[in-house]
Length: 306
Image 1 (cartoon, rainbow, N blue to C red):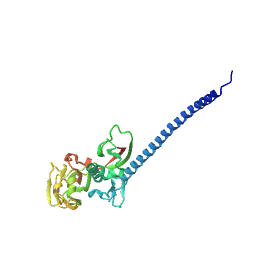
Image 2 (image 1 turned 90 degrees about the horizontal axis):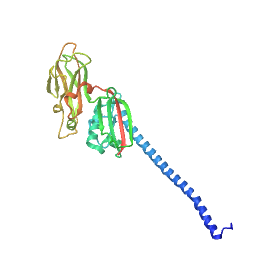
Image 3 (image 1 turned 180 degrees about the vertical axis):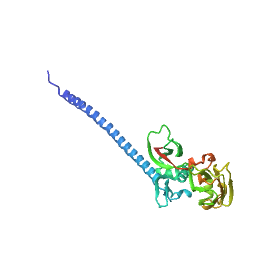
Image 4 (image 1 turned 45 degrees about the vertical axis):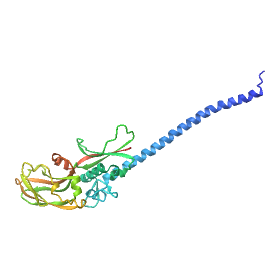
């Protein structure tokens, strides 16, 4: 009695070993699960960091640089075009956060027509979706968008915001504080056949400050006279049909000559004159000083994985 038989001793040892292995197996399983979670978290962190970097680099390039070439918006976008939206001033440097409406419109047109092959999509890569939304700081007035908003089921979205200066539509030539009874020559600007197909061009006249508006004026566009009276002088007028455009060489840029004559009004009359570039199919009622004069805006950029 009390003596364990030889064959029972081996059985007891195996049972003890099995009981010892059970917690070890559980521990190894828990460690393995933790390792999986750790690897997932590391991968998620690396992925998120990479997406953050792409978004940050893209936004900085858009609002801080003018692009390559500096006037890229005036020519067809090619594979070598690098877009930037900042104005390029006479001191040969970009004006950071002061954005060109013409560059913004050109970037939007390129994105809408080229999609994954657009210059902006190539900046972030084809694995990402993007959306740009620009609104005024005061009043949240919509200034412009590029792309489409992400679907509600998208989980990981990077959102970056910058404060910029931008107008809804761009003035490509202008004269300010004009007095009556004096002829004026409008600074020349170039157009091509392709640009007149992709954009609309408008004459816009508006009183400067709180002064009285002119009562009449005639604008000669490449020797084509357009008369304005008191009834329509503040209404935007589309001039695509009068601009330089060679359909046989659609990318060729040609200069346009505009003069402003027969300006009448009271002695204190004063006016601002703009040539405005807009996307096609914009209504004349939307081309106003409010949409042409730059405003302080929120530039919001969204990036997510497709």
